[in-house]
Amino acid sequence: MADTQITTDLGVYAEAQVSAAAAARSEPGWLVRAREEGARAFAATPMPTPALRPWKYTDLSGHTIEAFAPDAAFAPRVTGSAPSGGFAGTIAAALTDAAQATAVEGALGSVVQGTESKFVAANAAQWTGGVFVHAPRGGAFEAPVTVDVAGTTGAIYPRILVVAEANSEVTVIVKNRSTEAPLLVAAVVEIVANDDARVRVLFDGDWGASTVEFTTLRSRIGRNADVQVASLALGGHLLKQQIEALIEGQGANSLIRGIALGDADQHFDFVTLQDHMGPKSTSDVEIKAALAGASRSVYYGITRVETTAGGSAANQENRNLLLSDRAKADSDPVLEILTADVIRCGHGATVGPVDQEALFYLQSRGIDYRGALKLLVGGFFASVLNDEAFAALSEDMLERVQQKIVNADL
Image (cartoon, rainbow, N blue to C red):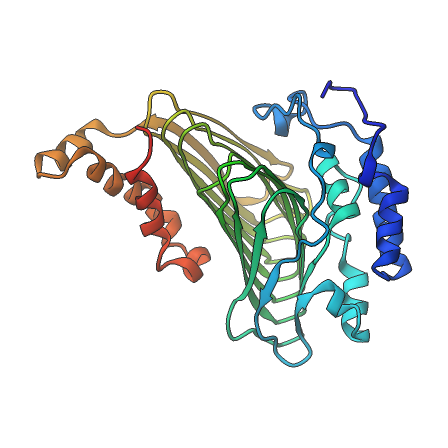
């Protein structure tokens, strides 16, 4: 699609079609209006181009969302038991309960505006089977809530809303799976973490080879609250995840962890934002990629410390390991420090091949080349895989990473 072209033949993405579908689902008026606003934004917004800095290395020329028909039957499967006063299930089910419906109406679209980008607008208009996880004040989920996202073909629009009231705790695991058929995934995840809340969201990504994913996750973090987001990216053809934290409260903390293991022509693009607004707040970002074949990794991250965030501390790291001379990585960590009153703000990035001396050492001990790479990549990912943010999947993550290296194009 040309940079300035706006599609006029919208089909099911047109406002009238979106409004009719929402009415057929008997959705409340406020939600129908939100969908219509998303449909109007979708029609008026061009596809992103490399002229936009977050899209510098991901060119969608020739791609259109309208080419993918929405799967109207798509609905994630939610597994989890909520404490008294809480909820874990579909948004549709939550809307049948007066207390939960009020919470959904107050929070849905409050963190990620439905008009802010082409993919977000498509999600705002088209999502089905949305997920709502509500941790009540002072309540803690005894076990993680699991959201199974299974796609087949066409387009799916996962929508997840997590609201954690004061002094509550919840962990959500999102398991992404698909077939080998072409599939577009445009997901939106909103997290509202009120004072002293603890929220963990973990993406377990193992898409089929023809899936393209565009995810926007944003959290709003209150006083002394803690939000940790982790992403394991193994499958898919193209994956772009934009993970942002609005660190509003004093003493609030945001942590982002991610690993990507690429092969063939896989393309991974991570964008992070840590926006410190509350004083004495903290953040930490660590994204690592190991790349075989002709795969590619892109990272663009901003850590911003506002004038109101005195006494804050932040760190941002991106490390890339090239397993093939055809693989490529681009890294651009950015600091925007608007106050002199900071504890520490650092950032770093590396791109390089496997350490040949370490490889030779392992091979000299009788380990074959691919086996040595498995050990080196496992060690490279260890600081992330062993992090608390990945604890819910710690048992099989390293095994899955190493299994992919067994068949990787080196």
